[in-house]
Image 1 (spheres, rainbow, N blue to C red):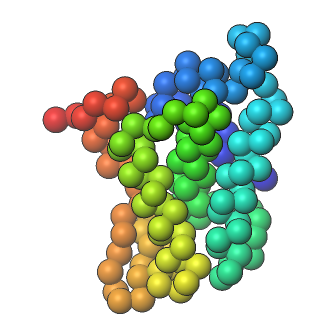
Image 2: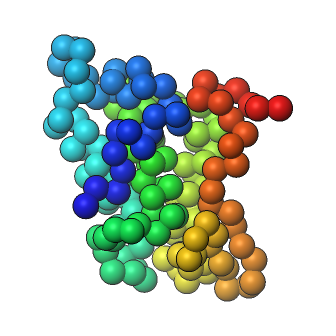
Length: 141
């Protein structure tokens, strides 16, 4: 089961960028092999960390943290394919999700039952979009 689809990324990054990042032969269409490579990296980034505490690969329905991480790790891969840095708000989200998955693997946090990760100290980290950013990176005020 794929953790993320190209459609899941619409609204997080411009559709034109998704196409550009996946169109290696410059024929105006996303290359299936390019997307397959992105998916492989996304699955590896999640499963290699979380397999320390969870059975992987995950099956539907995905834990919300896994689904969210998959979206942002796919974005990370797409920007990497074009050798450009993602905007700061995306880079910060990606970095935070990598750290959160490592915390789950160490047993310092657990996969939550909905939109939160519960830490062993009773705190919670919200892992749901706040809806405060536009697709072009601007903020909703």
